[in-house]
Length: 227
Ligand SMILES: [Zn+2]
Picture 1 (cartoon, rainbow, N blue to C red):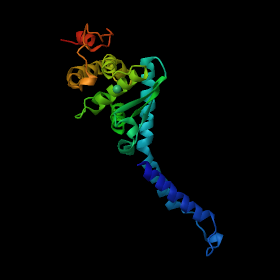
Picture 2 (cartoon, rainbow, N blue to C red; picture 1 turned 180 degrees about the horizontal axis):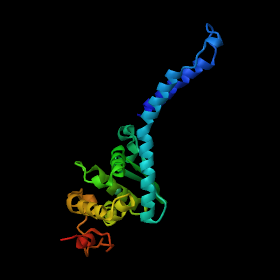
Picture 3 (cartoon, helix red, strand yellow; picture 1 turned 90 degrees about the horizontal axis):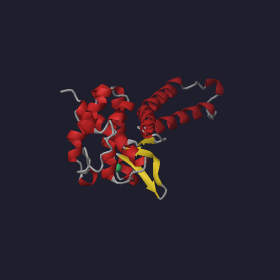
Picture 4 (cartoon, protein in one colour; picture 1 turned 135 degrees about the vertical axis):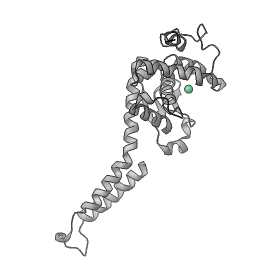
């Protein structure tokens, strides 16, 4: 879509150039301002830029929520649809944090689909359980990448830190306390056990080596669940 924005702006420049620069066979008095053409170009440019603008707003909002949860400034950047195919530097991951010798970057790149789920979640946090679980995944990916940015590199440890903060993050992103709890439990009970081996740990449970015993650890949330 961003290519369409550039194309519309390029055509706009051509129209304006034609209007501003006298053509050999036109007297200046006959040159009319190309209102319709300029209007159409601006409309196409605006509409095609809208998804990118919405994605940037969603990324900003996620960055503010994540910074609150982790206690330091972290940021997110949404990739475009084109990035999904060409941005090989991010391993085609749903979310990606670059590591250097100094540690993790404090900015994470999110895949287009992750940002789409995030935008949908912001539109209506009550509908977090969409058919494809896009919104639930998006919220969890924000938590997971935040834990990387906070300094954890190991995927299984990061994932366990994330499941213990999903409820916190969901609430910071706009869910009610009950929705946030249900989301965290849904992820831990239904999705976590089916993760790839390098993302899963048998120790991510009550009393396990990775149990941080947070009020928002899923096993503690479960205790609060109404019978
Ligand atoms: Zn990871």
